[in-house]
Image (tube, rainbow over all chains, first blue to last red; front, side, top):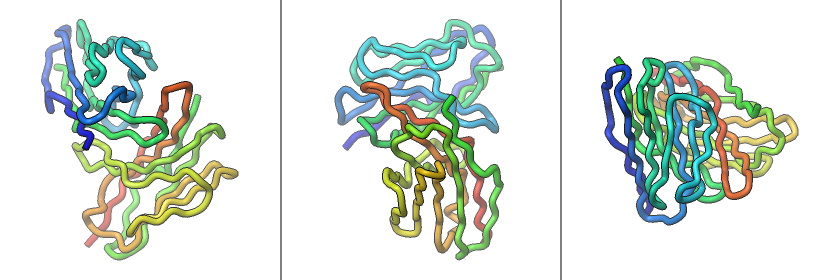
Length: 111
Length: 113
C-alpha cells in the first residue's frame, strides 16, 4: 500500500533562518506531488505542485521554493524565513483524478 | 479564479442528529468533488468522493452533487461526538497530467453528547 511520510512534525525557527521540509511517498511511482500551507483560521493554500522529477509549478509567488530530486521525494525550502511563513505545511500525492492523500504535516512557527 | 465556498459555521448538532454540510463551486469545468475531515492539529483525511450527479452513500455519510446548481453537500446521519471536526469540501480540475484540488475554508462541526 501507498504511504506518505513528512518530517519534521513540528519546527520552531527564527526569522531569517533557512528551511527544509521533506516529503517522501512509498508504494507508488510517478505520483503527482503537492505542497499546501494552512495558516491559522485560513483554508488550504496550494504552494507548489510537481508532475515529475525536476518539474515544479508555483502557484503563489513568495519566499519559498520547491524541488523534486527523485520520483518520490518532494522538498520545500526557504533561504530566509519570514514571520508570515508560519503555518501548517502539508504534502500530498495523487494519481489521476483521485483525491489527494496527505502526509501528517509540519507545524512551523517562525519566531 | 476557481473558488469553493462552504457555509461558514460553526455547526453544532446533538448526538444522533443529521449534520448537513454545504458547498458551492465556481468553475463549471470541475470534474470531481471530495469531502475531507480534519481533526484539530491533524492533516485532512479523505472521507467521500463524488463524480456524478446524485447521491452517493457510504455508511453514515451521504454525498450529494448537483452540477447544474454547482452544489455539493455532505450529510452525516446519526452524528457521533467523534464526528466533531472541520470538514473541507474540494473540487478537482485537470490540466494535462496534473490534477489540482481547490479547497473551501472548511466548516467546523461540533456534535454534542
